[in-house]
Image 1: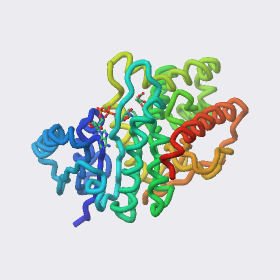
Image 2: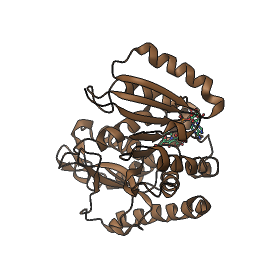
Image 3: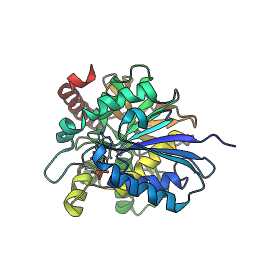
Image 4: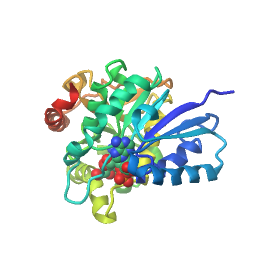
Length: 328
Ligand SMILES: NC(=O)C1=CN([C@@H]2O[C@H](COP(=O)(O)OP(=O)(O)OC[C@H]3O[C@@H](n4cnc5c(N)ncnc54)[C@H](O)[C@@H]3O)[C@@H](O)[C@H]2O)C=CC1
Ligand SMILES: O=C([O-])CC(=O)C(=O)O
């Protein structure tokens, strides 16, 4: 019998949670043969709503779900967890940037980091969705001194998926034939979708799309501004596409990344590409199938790319200053 994996999810009664949990339970994240124990975490006022979500999960009778637990605090919620998905927190509304959430959401990640440190399994892997996700991840990591830093990641997979979709629409190349689309930096409007190394049906993006000004301007700003555009259109921030990206982030962390491709994850910088060590920065990475990854370090970046990377690095340094008190 395969041992179940314990997956803890915060914000489990929220919009992303509602799109995410049923897919994890169906085996879409860890595979069709991997049993799971779902450990759902919310704040006290949302525990009634969470009860309803649990009833619905039960009513699906998912064969892979061995147990569902609920908790109104991260210490109970993360007990023995192998995977912790930190989704909970306020979403932004119209007119806000993600960094505006740092005061509301940042403090949540102090206790969550401590709870991971004290209660999660020794092999725990953490991914942060709640915004501003890079800086929240930095806070959690700094409050979990006994957990290796490389276990802490934040989500830029949605940005990678958005970028691929834009390239596909512009070029007519099918999504499945697009690879090597890296997101660098912060999950914010300064992120840098690095199209120069993207491959479209075996061709460089700049060859497949004969319109460099579109790539340098419209493409980048569309990907950077997609979250805002969705909030304006929907009146609420992206949820199903965010849940899909969260699921893919974890799925691909435990899969071998094909040698001729990579995935984007915000991880603690090791100084690659001159990015200050320790910042939670999105890079192209390759995973080994066992829950480990390596940053792809051999891209030759031109001045345009270097300049964009510097802008998003500077923004992350500023966000770090704002939360300095939460990093002690
Ligand atoms: N990184 C990314 O690409 C994306 C990030 N997000 C972010 O994800 C977060 C969640 O978004 P939604 O699900 O749409 O929001 P939502 O408001 O629908 O749900 C959030 C849930 O988190 C819960 N929560 C708040 N504080 C908590 C805590 N301390 N512990 C446990 N649960 C807590 C709330 O009770 C609520 O049920 C937001 O911060 C949003 O900005 C959203 C889309 C993409
Ligand atoms: O834009 C937002 O606030 C939600 C989010 O992170 C995204 O959709 O990328």
